[in-house]
Image (cartoon, rainbow, N blue to C red):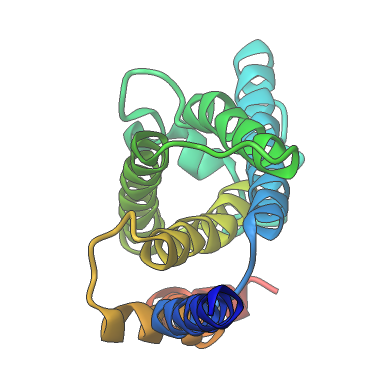
Length: 219
């Protein structure tokens, strides 16, 4: 009698576990994969930000120096560095990346070591990333329509910010930190790769529509 009851309880527990997994929907990656993404993306962002900050310092020391990121009059960091938009908070924008991206890298390292981070930490990181992406959109608009020049190091940061933001949203939806319905959660998680690509396609289309002719003529 007890053996039968134990077997039944075990079977019910297994079924409930399977149902719980079905309800969570597809899982695109685990904590270690998320950690690796943060380390790689944060590392690239830091290197690009530091390189641009270093170029700003060298330009201050020698105003006549040609920046290493200058290809021609259209593809150059100098126009962005010299504009008021390049120092929105009263200091060069790259300093923000130099300070912020190490936090992203450190978060990734903690995940790789198996650390479980609280919801408030993830939400704070996501909020900071949203603000960073908003700044990127403003700088993209400025580069396309006001400065009419492309900064190579800036574009590296633009490129990594989208997946940095998107995969935090995916992780938040999957874990339940972001309060979304089951249907939306499964759509976000199950189509995370397609949506990532769509974001890049939209950005490239914006770039080509805004400055495609100037870009082609510069080479």
